[in-house]
Amino acid sequence: TQLLEQSPQFLSIQEGENLTVYCNSSSVFSSLQWYRQEPGEGPVLLVTVVTGGEVKKLKRLTFQFGDARKDSSLHITAAQPGDTGLYLCAGAWNQGGKLIFGQGTELSVKP
Amino acid sequence: KAGVTQTPRYLIKTRGQQVTLSCSPISGHRSVSWYQQTPGQGLQFLFEYFSETQRNKGNFPGRFSGRQFSNSRSEMNVSTLELGDSALYLCASSPLGLSSGNTIYFGEGSWLTVV
Image (cartoon, rainbow over all chains, first blue to last red; front, side):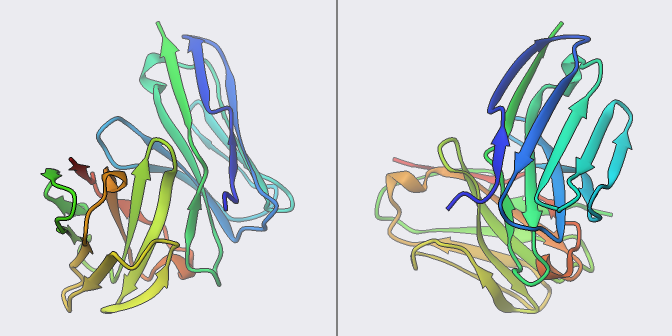
């Protein structure tokens, strides 16, 4: 059962454009993480959000955790070709002991 | 600090064979979790080991098994390989595990192709 819905699945944009990736669930998470994965490599953690309504910024990337801790978004401002990759959200429950991943968003930024 | 190390990086096996993959966690990390990544199913949780005990398990058949040693190194084994087992197998480590809300750190993965 897929508990985390990530959208869009594919995104192809021009350099300089803005974009937003969404991660939604009917479950409440204790934390939600965003990863970026390049071909042939393992995912690399970008950020962990824990508190409902929390907003974190990482240079041109802005991450938001929904007030109810069921959804999250990743916004990239002025995308660059170096942002190309697979972006994954992952939700965790303190009692569950599992990490559930969204299907991922394949981002391609063209120069 | 060395990262998570997985071996081998690439391997090809024949249907019906078995395979063992190895993972060395970051020094001091006691939790190791394993994941399977395929284009169709995405990243799926296999199991987590902590202090040599399996603590959590995903929805995979019994052909998938693992173990953890006293030095926290972990192995996973897949027996009676099927074509559908072709995937990137990722290992991740964390200090205290998924249920503690720790950040996990992934290795580069082992690419398994079953022919």
